[in-house]
Image (cartoon, rainbow, N blue to C red; front, side):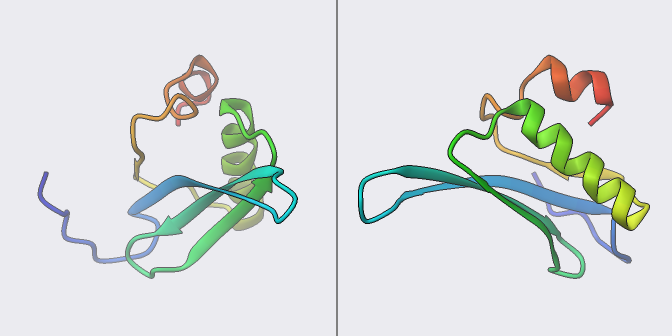
Length: 91
């Protein structure tokens, strides 16, 4: 897929998860949300268990704080992004 030509912030965001573990073996996940035009990281959510409902909560928090939603969001095909919770919110 060709990269879209971006002309302003909030046209195209990307979301992805990163996983790691602490020195004692406890695992954690990080959800990152970035604006592809400005390269600004809009949100970083850290938790031991982040699921689709958590993704919806993060996006709703961004909408409430910043007053914007993107025209388009790019995600991988992870189970957190393929869910009824996201579909119901129109994300």
